[in-house]
Length: 71
Image 1 (spheres, one colour):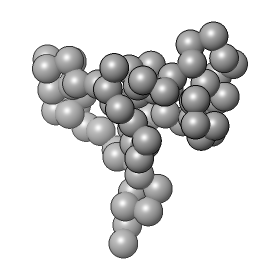
Image 2 (image 1 turned 90 degrees about the horizontal axis):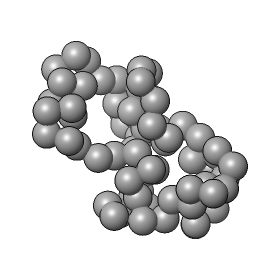
Image 3 (image 1 turned 90 degrees about the vertical axis):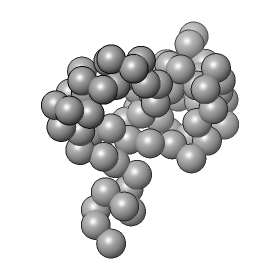
Image 4 (image 1 turned 120 degrees about the vertical axis):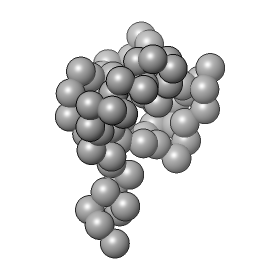
């Protein structure tokens, strides 16, 4: 198993980032029903999941969450 398979991370390339923008793909906490917008970053999951790595950011790996449900 690779590092990405065990951590839920994906290393996006330019093609994936382009597709995400083109098709408005949603995968970050800010688009999840369990996101608490008024909570401090990293503590903004209603299930108490430490989500700092899951928040929207312009670069770096994409980290997926098992609890994610689209709003």
